View 1 (cartoon, rainbow, N blue to C red):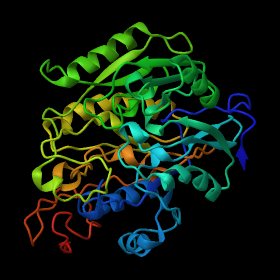
View 2: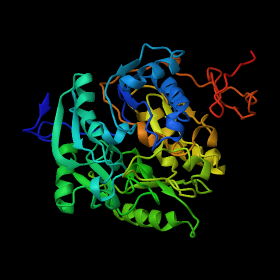
View 3: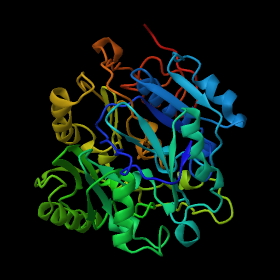
View 4: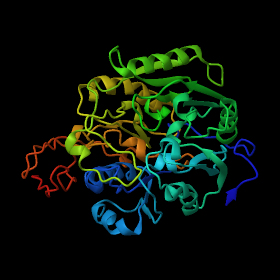
Length: 431
């Protein structure tokens, strides 16, 4: 049911934090040739592995149009199907968090969605593609598929990646995004803030100046900042003064150091490094896209908004982006241990985040636009407390050699990986 005559806050609903337990994850099967190299062929095996990891611990709702349903089912055929649900909802691209519903709860086991207006990150002003009608219609269909009521936020433009909350009344956004001319140009900052408080059931909005350098979303907050728990946060960081990100992160730090949350707490701030080497599109990658008229085009050498802060939390796992960079391992994982430590002790799901999935490494998986893959997939319907058993999780990483056809390194991939992501050759595993 669509709710137009009330707001979540008026009805006692609020948006929970990202680290809260949840019932499932929405994904969209990637096929758009202007967003994904080689019509999605490079990223689809990555989605198979993401679906394997996530569906092992919660429900997985996969949006796929009829034209690609058979392809998706064939590629997912070796996975257990019990927790994978195919939704015949067409979209223009695969950014589920941004175009999908934002979920709110009332603390008594009820959940509802919010339907924002989606305009491809800027509409006619600086949007990434001109035809986004199917994306804009998806949120209501997603809630209907799960039999969830949905609040209608009218013409207010917002993406899920542009907001972060602590579940206790605090919202964090970036001015670069929410005040951009392609979102809600007829609204003042104060009016935008009031709208957020009413629909997210919150008490305070903290405005960070900037996000990640060259982020085409107009610098979403989810790429630069994350809550570890109420009062404790992660901030994307670099000590390199010559990097354009340095000034942006410094500006955000100044705001966070001076701010208090909705409960009056000063923030404990942890700095999570960005990749040491900028992640840029190669000429080969740029040539593998096919663009429509009016679509934003990729250029060789274009810097991507690579950030480890855009990790994904599912029940019992942290899925961490990897960029083939020296920061991928010790420094970043050490920084995330604070997140693991907190969830072990206090997260209401009743089980530890004992698994950090870092098996998807470098250009093996994070081909162009895949190296910040988690941005596109995460949106979570929230459910009441569910206690999970340790046996519900897989943590085995298998050391192997390389593809027998092209020599591509496959170390740290699970044995259930059936095809080489580089050449597509079937992988034969030795027991």
